[in-house]
Amino acid sequence: MDLKEIQNLIKFVSNSGVAEVKLETGDVKITIRTTLEGNTPDITYVQQAPMQQAIAAPVASAPVAPATPAAPAAPAEDNSKFITIKSPMIGTFYRKPSPDKAPFVEVGTSIGKGDVLCVVEAMKLFNEIEAEVTGKIVKILVDDMSPVEFDQPLFLVDPS
Image (cartoon, rainbow, N blue to C red; front, side, top):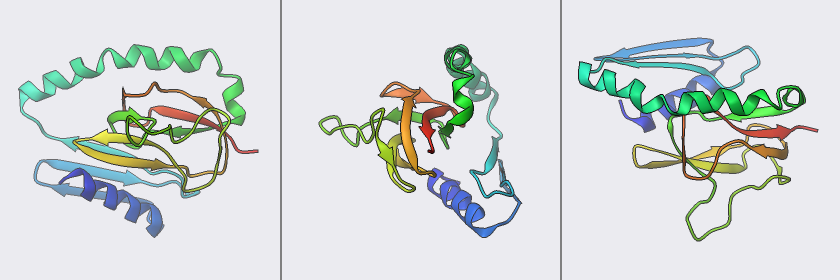
């Protein structure tokens, strides 16, 4: 199952109103759960891998894990009134559509539902990340061209 098929499945489940979908094909197991409010689905993706690949995965993500908790710890009090936009996938975060273009959004930019905020490149596919809320960008939490994890906070948005 490729990334495009997984993304289409996520969109379908989000729009269908179904609470949970489990899919098992060969060595891939996917579980997608949506909340009652219809927010971003909770996705579990498991792929059985040879031992060599399974060992390499935690090593690659180890440097990213310590940095993530340290950044949100300081402004934890202020974040309660803001909406956090998170990465829907693992990949590389890009603020610009191409190196010679301006960033999609800056701090202070007013956004509407469906506006493109950034691009996450995964497996040579560039996926536009759209806003699910209307508001104003308060903080950009990830540096351009940085690796991001699934569900990692990318932006803080003030919905007022």
